[in-house]
Image (cartoon, rainbow, N blue to C red; front, side, top):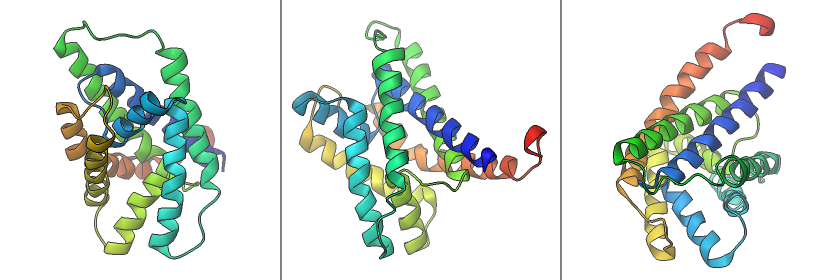
Length: 207
């Protein structure tokens, strides 16, 4: 259980760091992040709170897909996600402004963020502890329709792109958004397999 908790917390922290770097890079945020940023600007509250609220919505989507009661234990995960997002955005990177940075540097920050999301989500899923409802939706669609994480994640991200155009906001769909849309599912799949391989090896004090 200790090993699972370490993977769980480490994965969530890394993924939220990746989200924050992508937003600050200003080359295009993730589709759902754009939706939440738009809601933050128009209705107030922090980005972390909106992300947690949206995740709560997916909690009930998962229940409908899998035809069972909502996994209320996931409330712990979505709460941690919201807190970690606000930790990176409101505390660590509060004064970070890359508006005048060179495009190459901003793209580098963006790509690091994308890889960190893939690594973080792939890692925390390995713990088999309550998933972020959105990631649970990805897994539920994958299982229900017998498709890969790559395909199910791409379908979800595509629906968010449409919603982001409707809500609007200062952060819109950019070239980076398309990159995330195309590769994030594949990265999660790759890092999840790698994390599972490492998880099942006896290393150090986890042996």
